[in-house]
Structure formats: structure tokens, C-alpha cells
Length: 385
Image 1 (cartoon, rainbow, N blue to C red):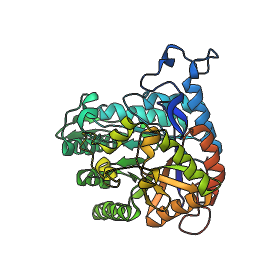
Image 2: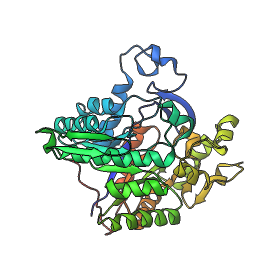
Image 3: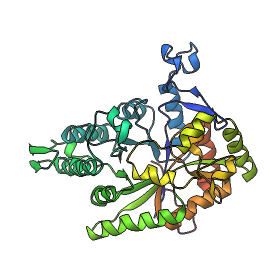
């Protein structure tokens, strides 16, 4: 078997290091007045944030990553559009497009995706997310309840698959009704995108077991991940399907463990009280995955060491740049070993990230990926191209 490893594309701007949250690259982040100037950093050279993330995609492509996750948040550009732009800048780089079913008509989504597949030689993938509820969900104009959102997701993917086959497809569901729909040739002949599916609740696992190729989760304590992987595979087996598992994880990898933890220590020292209070608080969402992340951190934090939950596993990453909580910190060999440990637990793919994404794509690609051995004790990353 092979292990697919993707990189993260920071479409919302990013800090220039883990040591400070002050953003310096890209131009999509709250309060950034660089939006008045198209150049990164406010200069006049005409080098835009699109040029910057294209550089990151290039770096990931030539460093051995299969492709990249293109995040979708209220403060980011639209991933479908960014994928189309980056497709012209890369040759083999695959685009993992996150989106919430319900904000697109499923027939339109199928046609958009098939068109992108045709134009790029089949480089599109789905990261299906169903939303965490609360204020963040209302930003999108979506007030559907938790389980209803997953029912809607299942119906959405039922229709996308149905119309992709071509011919005449009809569907009557709670949220969608389609009559005699279907993609025309040559769109219907394109490869259907692999589906990475996120969600930790029972409703999410039920939907994932029906449609997902990869069940995608944030990093959690390893025994929790073992139980989660077993649960989703059990549900999928009952449907006569097989599913793979993937882990999204931030890392700090350096030549020595001491250097890696020193980077984390500096970042934690620069964290202000408001950020730390927000980190320890409740976000108001109904996301089971977010609740599981919160459940693995202490109620009081006085040192970065308080957030070490397992050897080389640190649960304070969103203090450094926002996003997920837990990640891997260590030497190149230790980070590769922890990735191998996750493979032994059942992981078949990873989405990795580190700040700044450009330099770290080279560092991780050159220093960590060659050390990942997988289940068979030999280098088994899928060849790019």
C-alpha cells in the first residue's frame, strides 16, 4: 500500500514563524490593511497573495507532496476559484477542495467538479465538511440542526454520484429533489473525485461510511484515534464498503528535539492573555470533533509544557496560528516516527502543515517525508505524477 501526504495552502495569510501570531504573508486575515495594496507586505512590486500561495504549491509539488488542502473559512477566498488558478501554476499538484453541502446545488457541484477534472487531468478531490453549528454556521446563512446537516450531506453526495453516471437520474429526499438529471459526455466520463470526509459524531460517521473514500480527522491521543478508526471501519464494513483513514496534523520538525520545543516555547511566550483565555473557553459550536479537542487539554495553562499530552504531541497549536489544537513536535526522526505510529494505527493519508508554509514545505519534504516508512518498513509514499 502507499501513503498519500498532502500539504496545507494558507489562503488566509499566515505568520512568518511559529514564534509570533502577527501575520506577515498573504493578505486575507482580519484587520489587515494590506488589502488596500495588492502586494504582499504592502510593497509595490505587484507580487500578490496568489503568487505567494502558488509558490507554496510549487514547493509542495517538488518536495513530494501529493497536493494540498485549500481551506475554506469566512475570511478566505473561495477554494474552487483558487484551485482553478493554481491548476495553471502546477503540473501534478492535486487540489483538496473543502466545502459544505447545502451551499451548492448538488447538480451544479457535480458539473463544476467534472469540469475541473477535465481541465486538470483529474486533480480535484473533495474535503466534505458539514459545519460545526453555532455562530460560525449562521455566517453562511445555515440554521439546520446538527443531524439534519449530515442527512443533507448524505443526500447531496447521493445526487452528485447519481448524476455523474450520466443518463437520467431522479431523487426524492428530505432536502433535495431531482428529476431526470445527469451529466453529459464528456463530463460524465471524468474520474469521480476521491472524498475526504470530516466529522466525529455518530451522524457524521454514518454519512462517511456511505460515501467517503477517506475518513479525515484531526490528530487526537493515539488510543482515541484507534477507537475512532475502528468505529468508522465497522460501520463501513456493514455496508459492504472499505474506507481508508486520514489525519490532519500540524508539525514542528527540527534537526533536534530541543530546537523544535524551543520554537514552541517562544511561540507560547508570545501568546497574549486574550488568546489564551479564548483557547481555554468554549466556542459555542455543536461540533463533536471540536469538543473532543477541548477535552484533551488542561483547564489551566502556565507553561507550554502543560500542553504536552503524549511524547512529542502538543495540544496548543491553535495558540500559534489558529486552527486545530494538537500536533507533533520533535526532531525529523521523531516526527517521522510518530507519523509511522499513526500509520500503524490505521492512517492511510495525512494533511500536514507548518508555519511558514513555504519554507516548511521544503523542510518537511526533504527532511521528514523520506523517513516515513509506513507499515511495510520501506518508503511507501505514493509517487507524484
